[in-house]
Length: 166
Image 1 (cartoon, rainbow, N blue to C red):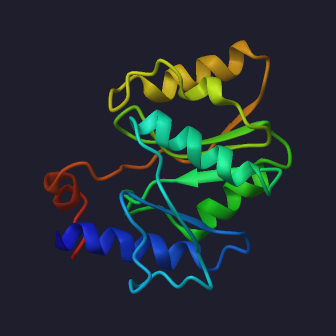
Image 2 (cartoon, rainbow, N blue to C red; image 1 turned 180 degrees about the vertical axis):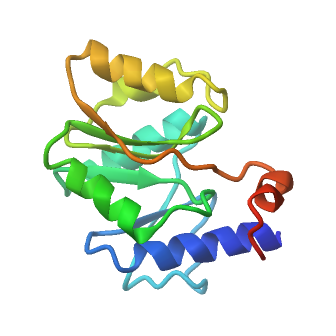
C-alpha cells in the first residue's frame, strides 16, 4: 500500500506543472477529500470493463472538450514532468505519441484524433501490447513519436529493483 501511495503522490506532483486540463479517473467512486485537488484535477469515475475499455472511455471523455489527449498510468516512478510535456509537444508533429514500457506495454499514449480501434481486441498486460499498438498505428498510415522507454511498477520487486524509496 505504501508503494501505491508513493506512486500516486509522484504522479500528482509530476502532472501539476503541466499546463493542461487534467482528468483523474477513479476506480469506483470519487474521493473529494483526497490529496488530488478538484481545482487541479477534473474528477471522473472509470468505465467498467478491461483496461482497454477504461482507456477508451477516458479518451472519449477527454476528446469531448479537447483536440489532443494524452493518458498516463500512475505506475511509472521514473516518469517526469518533462517527459509528459515532451509527449504533448510531440503531438504538434505526430499523430500519436507513445511512452514504451520495458515490459512491452506503455506508460503513456497520446493522440490528436480519437482512435478507439487501438483498444479493441488487445491482450492487455502482455509483452505484445506496445508493439501491437505501434503496428496498428502504422497500418493506418499514421505517425507515432516514441518517448524514452521506462519501467513501470507491476510488483514490489519492480520498485525495489530500481532502488526507489517509499
